[in-house]
Image (tube, one colour):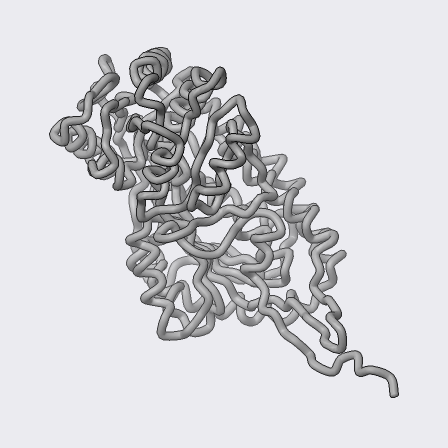
Length: 476
């Protein structure tokens, strides 16, 4: 049994104010393998006080001092990559290959990106007689999810540090041990006491306390849209900034050209990656009516070739994170069948031979219409819906007919046509033929959130803009 019964506050590992624990379950075995302390509002208050005390000195550090700290963090992170990958596989079920190749390294990618951005970021700029200053917003509350734990922690912590902010992190209680390793990395790197603080616990307890605390100046939240609404409500009374990266139901328009087969394969794999537990997964695949059967055949063959099983082995898909998520995905598969969509791969229940663990069959529905719940609601599992369009105008109309707007995708051998379609999609990030970029802004339109993360754009969420008029008066 792994235990993490202390919080990281003021540069030290401290006991909780009120003893209480939560079990942590391995989704591959359904058994508790660890235990953490569950924090309270009193623990949040202590962490916020430490962050507030450290804020003036950290805000006064130079660019070079912050670069040195970030470089040390990157070095310590590199040393712990293997430990992070192991923890992520055990706590949330990501296959070992995915944890080693993407889940753990992506955090280092965000840290290195922050270093590069910080080298040239303009904290001060003169516009005529006015000096524009970008100053640290102050103490930040960071609330992160379990599905890409290091991605979400690092893409918040790194720019907060770089811009001179202090912080209190609440990682997901579903993925606490990778977060503990991250705190150990911060400690080993010599981050000044109080600059980074971490409190474990639940959203209703610790998350709500962070959101409502009057000494926190901004909250950066990643999670479901419903939870994001509650964070915003809790934060409203203190008029603090709230940035949110929330849910998605991303469209993937496959054009009718020689890139069609590759686009369908790539799109199907993108949904199944991480067992479908990615907010930007392209879960609505739009194909021409005339190529519906071809798309179904390719998607079916793709999922039939995937191994679902022990994430510590050679599986392509591990389990979903917990029983609630398993039951949620199963209910949506049943809903799709009841709605009249054609089940062409996968279906209800666990894959054959897997009687224990929260494993879901990679599932593909065809003949889906955009009014069906499986096309409108975020499932957060390995479930792909294939919809058909008559022409590209209809494809764009269907793609944009959603309450979400996090990501969208276009697949085509004709790059000019792909660019034209991409420019019409209502989403914060549009990917052409699988393009990716950690320096590009990431965030949503509509109910997918507000604000942006990653690269230079992430820095702007952690600064306030101050204008000093008459800074450079005209000479007489």
